[in-house]
Image (cartoon, rainbow, N blue to C red; front, top):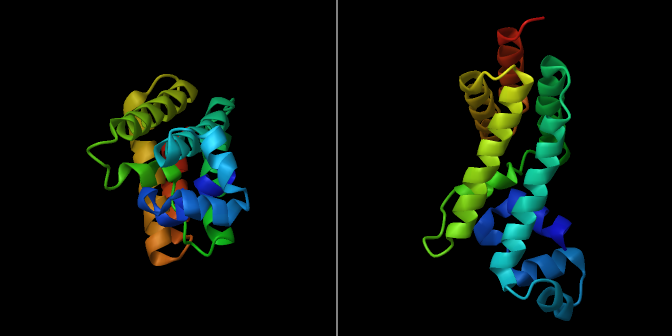
Length: 168
């Protein structure tokens, strides 16, 4: 169910993740949602957001060579968008757009996730937080532009420009 919720989040945004949509996508019985997620839709969204954040966070944390790690991260998103006809975005961005005023936990998750990713990138870069912020903004912006243009070009250009900033 979590994988289905993450996919729906990437495709439709937070507003498109409903219990019915998760059940339809996952094929799980209705009772299992209420058993595993007694908090309903909000709990599903938070769990999906955390799962997606952890997946990307692991990729960042595993970086031993920042240049290779960033190349792999941009390549991961380029391939993921291509495999989904450029109809997906980063699930954390999907949660950040149009936040609900009555769901501050989602805003907290988004803020904490981006901070964690930025710290991970900065650590790989020897502590350069400003460059890490720029790289994260370039990556997330390129993901959005690639979806909008239905083209890998924004991600490829952003990757090349980011890598050009790093020592060889």
